Image 1 (cartoon, rainbow, N blue to C red):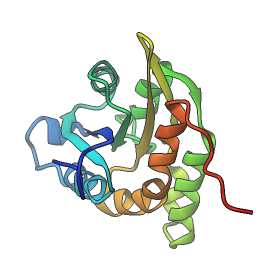
Image 2: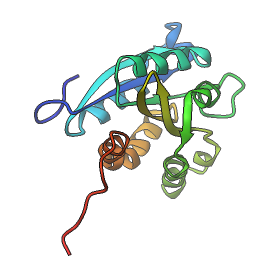
Image 3: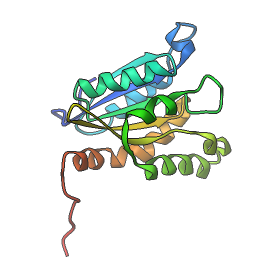
Length: 175
């Protein structure tokens, strides 16, 4: 997908963690929604969705995004309590540090919308580093609704977060 309203300033990988979608049992829906939501953001070029099985393949996809120079990678799926859900475990070893406020805000936004199970999400957010490159990583739930709700939180802060990773200063308001 191409950037909305002009040239891309940020490359974002969309990664679906789903054993069944990766095996072709059913089509990936949440990854498509993620790409649509990311594509609505000004200046974002979307890579994907890359559909992988949960667990180690998620980590491999995140490393691929980092090596390819993506500014951010957003995953969907594998954040729940099911024994097959292993996205946080595949993500955590790649993070140089976590950004807990993003993950907390994602869970709170779902809970505020009346989705009681939002608090069961084990999704992480943080910064991965490899070979001198840095990339924001955010784990979203695997449902289309969870992706939409998550992007309502992530969308408004994504550009600022990437600019911060690039060494940018905080925006200043006139006094």
